[in-house]
Each structure stands twice: as structure tokens, then as C-alpha cells.
Length: 144
Image 1: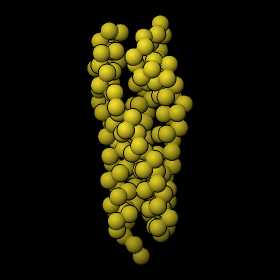
Image 2: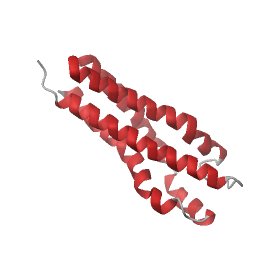
Image 3: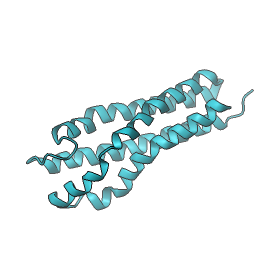
């Protein structure tokens, strides 16, 4: 029971930051360069939230190994979706963080980088939401 609860809670907490990015996207995507870089300052220190993703991956995998039949597949799917989130971050989000030094360096192609950064977070919001749904259903399935 503890593993089930932890898998739901940790995966749910891992969903918070991507959803915050998704909700603010419509207002941020059209900001001027100056305003965008000022707004980006709010993310200083958010790397700590990123540690929730590996924890969610582990919790979802533990639930998959502990579960039977259908719940096992759902928990494994949740873990796979968290892995997809991490891959998206590594391929599309982190390179932008590196080039812009976490949005403290303004480059000529900042608009292209902004789109890549914002939309990679938006996709990850969807991916992490699906992981949350899958792990929640897995955890709520009755055990035989």
C-alpha cells in the first residue's frame, strides 16, 4: 500500500512544474525579449524540482514490479512516460538551458530557443500527465 501511495504522490508532484510551464505558455510566448528574460528569472533554483522525475521513475518501477497483471503494465507505462519526459528534457530543454546559461545570456536566436524551451515543457506536461493517470489507475486497481 505504501508503494502505491508514494508512486501516486511522487508522480503527481513531478507533474506540478511541467503543468506550471504549460499554463503560463500562452502569456509568455509573446513577451518581448526584455520581459521574457525578466520572467525567466523566476526559475532560478527550479532544478531541485527536477529530482522528482527520477524519484517518480523509481517509484513507478517499484510499483510495476510489485503489481500483478494489468496494474503492472500501467505502472510500467507510467515509468516509461517519465523516462520519455527525461529524454525530451535532455534532447530539447537542457541544450537551451546550457546555451542561455539558464536564460541569463541573451542570444540572437533567443526566439527560436524560447520556442524550443517552452514547447518541450508543454509536451512534457502532457507526457507527465499521462504518467500520472497511468500510475494512479495502476495503484487503484484491486490486488487479486
